[in-house]
Length: 391
Image (tube, rainbow, N blue to C red; front, side):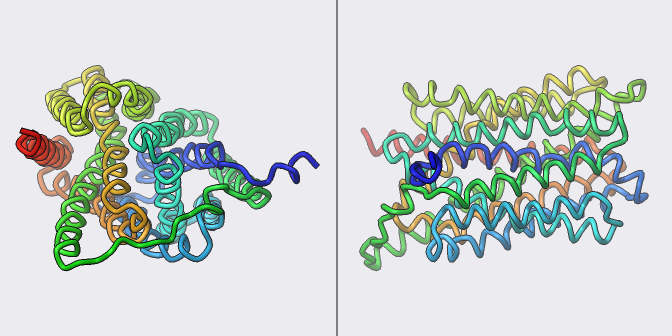
């Protein structure tokens, strides 16, 4: 009775819990990868195909997401994404190598349906403080990402990885069922008006879409490359330990979480471009520390610096998307979000390819370092441009 009388809700709690589960799902390949490599006798290039499958399928889901948003709204799109993710991760539990690729593709499509809906919901529901709201939302993703290596390590110690995967699948299904009983208030109030379209506006819009899409491509690819490969990198240095290397992604994702939780404080005092530039500078230094490491302790330090530095980039970028394109953000996101997750497919694979070609995973980590440097140059150029406009 209480639930029936309170079915129209803002939806923030549901979306945050959805992102916690998504964070676990999308970062579990990193700590699972060494075990999968042994199980299926994979080379680094073959292991990289799992990341490619995950993020190419994410891109496909994101292409479909705007159409679902326009027709069904945020809540139903989130339900659809959760159900598809639950099916994929459940199938992964006992799949052979070919089946595992199919399972990863399935849950990747679900995540692709889910992520634009969650981010654009947070931006639309919080028009006065988009960047801060998106930072907190993506901090929820960081909670799941930080917990994921710990959960995987615990499952591996007791040899219950399939049970972990079935449990994650059940949690997603339960959340989807919970969402089916409520209504999002923002779905009732969505503005469907479109901006006027003049030739000058269309030209500016096209240039903006290309620039923001490139930023998303590089960022998602760089973050995923570090988060996905850091456990394997640490494993190859930490030959004397059988467990600690598996938890190194926790430091990366934990720092990402801490950065996103504290970003709203920084954004109250500093420009978005300033916060992003400082973060990318820190991330670049962190990757250099990882490259210079000869033992696991500096890897942990570098991973922590990189995660904290990357923390604000995605929320700020999504905030820019919603601010520039307003009511057209969902449609524009149909182009930008898939490009972003193609970066997640391409750059981790490139790390594996460089590692296989050179015989050194250390050389592969030059890929996210280059990505971080390019983003830093872009944000510094944007900050200088804004300064000239104001003067």
